[in-house]
Image 1 (tube, rainbow, N blue to C red):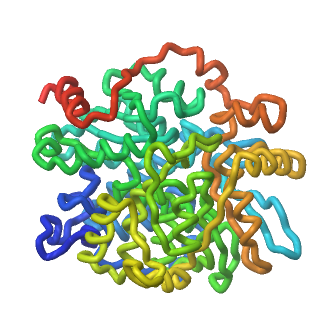
Image 2: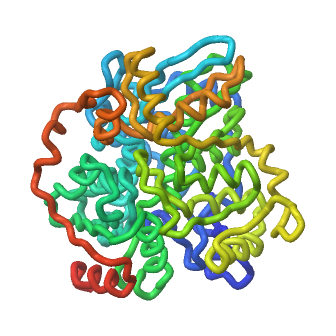
Length: 491
């Protein structure tokens, strides 16, 4: 299996296909594009039948071995077995099995269809990103140990990526983590999860701005190829291909758990800001998983919803980005969206490069086909199964109250966005699976507003906000960020 950049034009430095191990540590391609396989591996009906009997770790191995063909089977099997154990994913709710890793719970069955919640908050930081980040930490350690090398991870978070990455990488040999987050724009729980870590290989940097400013800094540093090479910079954001592939697994798991035969289809609704999680669903669908619809649920920062309704991708300025009660989706420049656009324009790297150059120069592009637009590829969105919807703070509160009253489950704010939008797209005969984002305790301020009481917390998280915190505050300045990295790596 080989990989190519979405911007692999004739002049691109990433034109030559790479192996999985070649791109594992790097993140962005040298030309600024994102890596994708030269073709998607296909899954047969016989494989799906066989996979119904597998544990989550075994399923992860079977899927990952299609992408990481240069990692020996024995090593990959050991890595997945070590990553996906009940001991790591011990935070299952009452009535859920930690051994299932991502258990399903049917919420509604009726004439409108079946609504299912896939629990993804059982990991060490209580968020879906643990599903990929725990594997990524083990993959990084394996790759670095082979060459006695080291890696400086430079990432950005709107809330959950940071803590998931830091918990996965803390104490890992040869790894340092420099994590950017928007200053005072995460929940108190999210902030405490990250900033309370005292491990010497963890560096938290609160950026005076919004998440998009943090993401822009990561891309600017990554695009300085000499600095990146000298300081051995890698990333754990969803621009990292291995991170996305690890998330493909729970789409397969959800489908296999919700169906009994391969003739059945399911749909997924995914709370989405950076297009990473739902991109994994798109990849699963391209591999042949019988997915009917992929529904992107946004909050008030509705860049993705606008595109899937109109064909116009219009990035908002920092001043136009709302600070909401589902803060992990407070994103107005979806970095993973480029992977889908590359497919939408027929894998035309030159066109993809031009469109995303226009994002930088003009703030977006228009594929609606209207007079004066940049193209008419929006007409092909339907064949990829995408739909979308939008949720607001009022919707969030109403959905949290409704789900708690009807089903006795307290869901977090992002999952509430997903449930609200999923209900608008349900179809009879096709189960709609909502991918949970995090445990409600991470966004307790809004839970108290909705229900008048605190969300339950797993053992070990009772007083996390009271722990001492270690972080620095910096402006969104690329040169200052590079100087900080240089100072703390000694390179």
